[in-house]
Amino acid sequence: MDIKEDKELRWFDVEFVPEDYIFSKEERPQNLDIPVCDLIPVIDLAKAATSNGHTQSIEAVLTASQEFGLFQVINHGISEKTLNDAMSVVKEFFDMPSKDRTGIVPHMKNWIYTNSTDYAKDGVHLWRENLKHSCHPLEKSIPLWPHKPTRYQEVIAAYVVEIQKLSSRILEMICIGLGLDPEFFNDKSEVQLLSTNFYPPCPDPTLTLGILAHQDPSLITLLYQGNSTGLQVLKDGEWINVGAIPNAFVVNIGNQLEIISNGKLKSIKHRVVNSMHETRRSIATFVNPSPDSIIEPAKTLVNELEPIRYKASRYKEYVHRNKAFGDYTVALQNAVHSES
Ligand SMILES: O=C(O)CCC(=O)C(=O)O
Ligand SMILES: [Fe+2]
Image (spheres, rainbow, N blue to C red):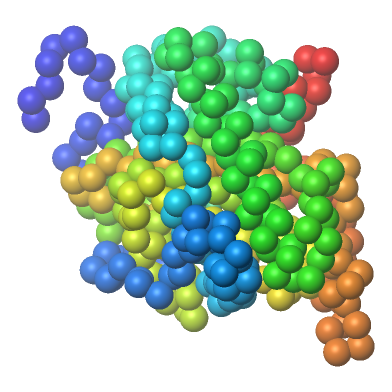
C-alpha cells in the first residue's frame, strides 16, 4: 500500500476484513453478482408539473409506493450545483483528520459522528462512517451543525431548503393518490433529520455490510446517492440493486406512511452493500411526522372492507422506544429544543 508518512491510517486501510466486521452467513451479502433492477419506477417530475402528466405521475407514484415502497425522481427542480456542493462538502467532512470529525465531546453535541466503532449487531461493525444531525426548525439548527468544513453549514442549509420543497411536493402527490387532503401533512411533518454516510472500499464486500436491512422510521426518506451503487431492496424475498441515476433522488416509503395509509403503501426493507473499488457517499433526509403527532391509519382509508390494521402511537414515543435513529436518538431529538 502506498501511504504517505503524514497520512493518518484509518480503520479501512486494511488488506483483509477484520473479524469483527464479518456478518453471519444469513446477514452478509455473499453474492454480489446481482443485476440492477430496471423495474424500479423513475418518475419525471417535470412531466408531473404539466396538466397532461399530472394524474399519470400521481398514479405512477402510488403504484411504485404500493409495489416497491421505493421510486426515483428526476427533473425534480433541485439544481445540479446544489447537489454537487452538498456531496462535495460531505466528502470534505469525511476526509478531514479524525480530531475534526469527532469533535471534543462526541455525545454531548448536536451532531453525532460515528466511526465504524459502534457495534451494529451482535458485536459486528458496519463498514461505514456516519454523520447525523437535526434539521428542524432549520434556522435554529444550522448553527449547531459541524463548523468544519467551514462551508458545511451554508451548503447543507441550501440543500435542506430545497429538500423541504421537494418533499412537500412528493407528499402532496402521495396524498392526492391516496384520496387524502393534499395538505394532510402540512402542519404534521418536517424534514427532521439529515444522515450522511461514507462507505469506503472494502477488501471483501461479500462479508460486510454498509447498513443492515431495515425500514425507515419516517414518512418518506429522500436519498441522494450521487453516482454510486450499493443500495439494495428486498423484493419478493430477493435482494435487488437500485440503479444509480445521475442527479436523481431515491424516495423511500417509511413505516409511518405505511401506517397512515393503513398498509396500502409499503415500507420496503433495504440495506447497503460495500464495494471493493468504489467509495459510496449518500445523504439521507428523513421527512418525519412532528414528534407530538399521533400516527394511525387515516380515518378515510378505514372501512368495512379495509379494517384498521395498525395501532395508534405518538411518534416521539415510537422513536424513543425503538431507538429509531440509532443509539443517540434521544440526543438528536432533543438537540434543538434543549438549546431554546
Ligand atoms: O446510504 C444509503 O444509501 C442508505 C441510507 C439509509 O438507508 C438510511 O440512512 O436509512
Ligand atoms: Fe434507510
